Length: 221
Image (cartoon, rainbow, N blue to C red; front, side, top):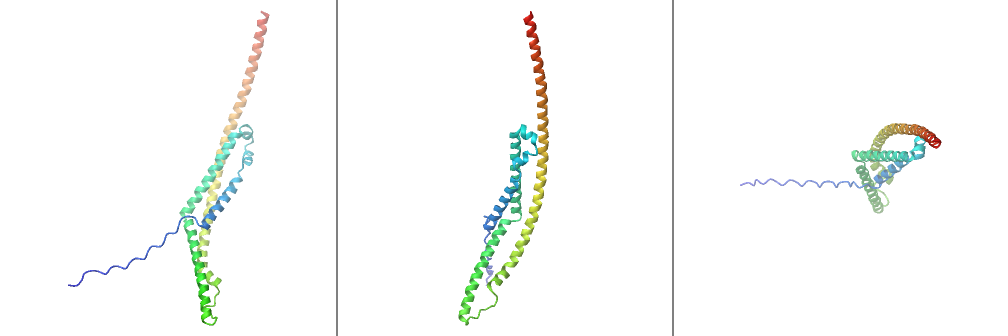
């Protein structure tokens, strides 16, 4: 009786090792550059510059204005960081930069192996290498397509960053409008308090005069 056992399928190739999402040197450098750029941008919104736009409130309610300034800067910073992290996740920037690290390291190893092979071939064939191309040309041939791809990705990232900067500028404009409304409200309250103080002073003066008149009448009696 013929065997009905089918041949076992060939084993599938092992899956590729996942690229670690821990930021590598280039991804860490990108974070550092962004943090420094963001800090530099937010430093331009200093309290002296901010308070100069609202001199009345700065002179009469400086603590309230400082609180508003601190909240605005904090909200802008958090908004910018959240948007940046979202871009990194959506475009897999860390994963791709880590992949670039691996490609460059692999190219370096291949270059080192190629140099060793050329030295062995030169020693065995009377100094004639198997190819005439120098190592930099071979390395460039391997890395140019990778650099081209990365350049395209960086251009896309730059366009996205410019778009996010436009969104941030719009957010700053809205925040300024809210602050101006708040300042106008504070100025109205300050004016009302000034008027109330004036009325109160007149009332106190009137009561003082009446008290003096009453005291004079009592003395005459």
